[in-house]
Length: 450
Ligand SMILES: [Zn+2]
Image 1: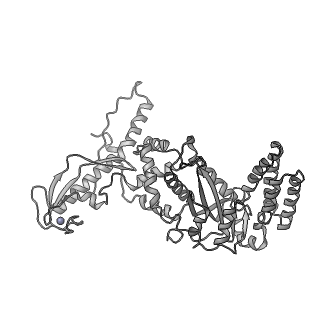
Image 2: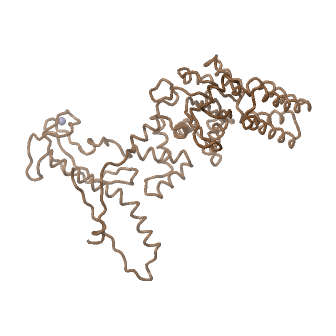
C-alpha cells in the first residue's frame, strides 16, 4: 500500500461585492471537469515511478537482474530491465473520469533489447486511447438520445464526448454483447413463460420502406403494486433486415414457453408454429385494435366511427382483464362486438376479427391461466411490447435521419440489451465499473495552505 497526496491550490479573490456566487460555482464546476483526471494522472505517474525504482534500482545506481512483475513483450523474460527515460510527448487517454495525460517511462530489456512502457503493459492499456468504461458510458447515453446530444451531455460533465465518439462507442460496444441473437451462448437467457414476437419498420438502408426489426421478448416476471405492475423481460431474439424465419436459430434452444404472443402477421405465426408446435398462440391485445383500425380504413369506413370501434375494442379487452371474465364470457363479448362491425358490411374488418377469434383469449384458457398465474393478469406482453416499441421508435426516429443497417443494428442491440438487463450487458457493465476499493481522504484543513 502506498500513499499519494495531491495538493490543490486556488487563488481565491477576497469576499467582497465583486465576488458572486456564480463565479464560485463556476470555479467548482471547472474543477469537477479537470480534477478527477488530474488526480488519476498524478497517481499513475507516482505508481509508475515506484515500479521503475523497484525493477531497475535507484535512478543513479542501476541494479542488474532485479525481478519484474511483468514480462518483456519481446522475449518474455521477467527480470533485468534498464531505465530508458521518459517519453517527451505525454500519452493521452480518454477515460470516464476525463482526459488523462501521462508522461510514460520506458524500460529496456537487457536480453532482447526491446524498449517499452511497463505501465501500459501492467494496466492492459497497450494500444488503447479510450477506456472500456468510457465506451460503455457513451454508448449507454447514445441509446437514449441522439449521438450529438449524447456527446454534448457527456462533455458537459467533464467526460470526453462528441457526436463522433458516441457513435464509435456504439459501433465498438455492440459486437462485445455476445449472447444476443445466439441462444446457445452461456450469456443467453434460457427460458420465459411468455414469448412475444413482434416487428417494426425502421428508416434504414437504401430501400424506400426501410428495414424490419424483429424482436423476441420474454416476459419472465412481474413486480410492483397491482396497478403499476412492471414486467421483467428478457431479450430472446433480434434480427434486422431479415425474414422472420431467420430467427428460428435464436429461439430453437429455448425451453418452450407457456404461450407465445403474436401480432397476427402470417410469417410470425408460422415461425411460432414451427419452433414450438405444441405451444398455444395468443393474439397481441395491443396490436388487434390497431389492426382493426387499418382494416376499417381499407373498408373505407367513416373515420369517426372507425376510431370509435377501435376504442371500443380496446375497452373490451381491458374489461376482460379487469373483470376477470372466463374464456366463454370473453368470447361472447367479442362476438357481440364483431357483430356490430359485420352489420355494417365491412369485409376486411370482418375477416380480421374472425381470423383472430381463436387466438384472442388463449390466455384465459384454464390450463394456460394456471401456468401464467405467477405473472398476474392476462394482459399478456402487450403493455411490455408497447413500451419497448415506443422507446425504440423514439430513439431511432430522430430528425428523419436514415440509418445504415449496421449502425441501426448496433444501436438496437445495445438499447434492447440495456432495457431488458440482458446478462451480456450487465456482466460487461459490472466488469468495467466495479465499486471503487481505493480509499481516499479530503483534508480540508490544508485546503488553502499553499
Ligand atoms: Zn526481451
